Length: 323
Image 1 (cartoon, rainbow, N blue to C red):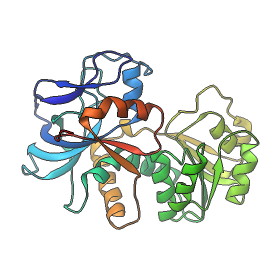
Image 2 (image 1 turned 120 degrees about the horizontal axis):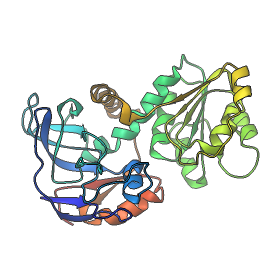
Image 3 (image 1 turned 180 degrees about the horizontal axis):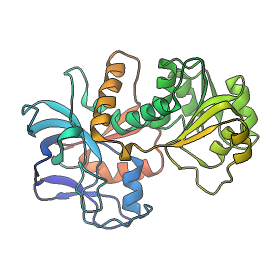
């Protein structure tokens, strides 16, 4: 069968032929229709992950498609699914015409959910919702979303507004894309760059920050911590802005603040399937979207390189059709 294959660490995947997936007692077989790219996959293939990948392997941590064989869902039903583990370390991923995936990861898709949206909403939406839930908003909070021009940030902005935030500020490096963040519901935006970020965040929020959703870490997160409100909390889900920082710990401690760190990859599959169904309900009701672009499997190498450069939209690889 056709698949995207990483042949060497440091190289993007290319289309090749691989053997059929092998099912075990806890797996379902799916015919894959669409697979979104995620930053963690690019880090693994590029050799920027703490563990070294073991090529050749098929990448892809999630996707949508149709059931071929399952113990609980009839053949032909459309589903969203995840891989059993992060591919590259002995597990084959989902960027193939067919994939063996854990039964508990399957979430049935309604007919009205298009493949590209259903695929794009997966990991990024679950990550954003986990972060918002960990922040435990009671309503009316001042919320800052760092990295708001990325897919996780876009979803976090929308969820914060939907779940009752009093004021939502989106921060990112691309001024043009920040205008899209306004369209998605941010009350104000801050362009990350030179200057006093702490002051900019506080001014945009209209006061100290009750909640910070942080896919960046690095200096943007430290600047946000400096204007954290009493009992404010920062929830970190990534570190694309770096790790070489000094946490303003005394200030955070004096304000009784909290730092949380979460990873959707370490969250149980059943819980993630439940969260995904909730996200899909929001989306189909018109409350939530993900900017996305569909790319054919033949162009997976180019899409891979675009993902590594932060494309500003969710790239979804179409499987099963040529051209």
